[in-house]
Image (cartoon, rainbow, N blue to C red):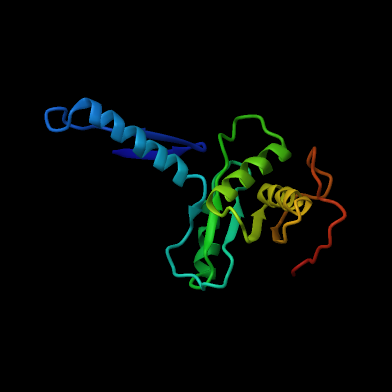
Length: 171
């Protein structure tokens, strides 16, 4: 089995000897494995360090391009103690709205953590997506901790809701 994620899409290649494993079993196993690989790509652990049991996981939302590898150094700095998960984006060439990106990321977050807690962060476009996710969650009555790392300027993205929220600037 070889697998790679390219442009937010999973590409996998399976090979087996049909003399050893019947083709029907190979196909069924490949289907199950592909479903597991796709589900695992929805929310990706960024470190394997143990987390404090009482610390809510930090969900890092993908910046433009959809990749989450940019968060690996931050996750290593926060570990051990803080569980960090990345939420990758889809195909960066596909047209998307901020609301659509936030809805997709929130769906992935809820798949992994159905009841929260909601500790969101994002860098650049990821900050705008995290902001929109926080707004959606707050409308549902959820409590959200939000950290923005160099987000876009309020009002600079079409459909952005980066206004009227308390903020603190870290120097």
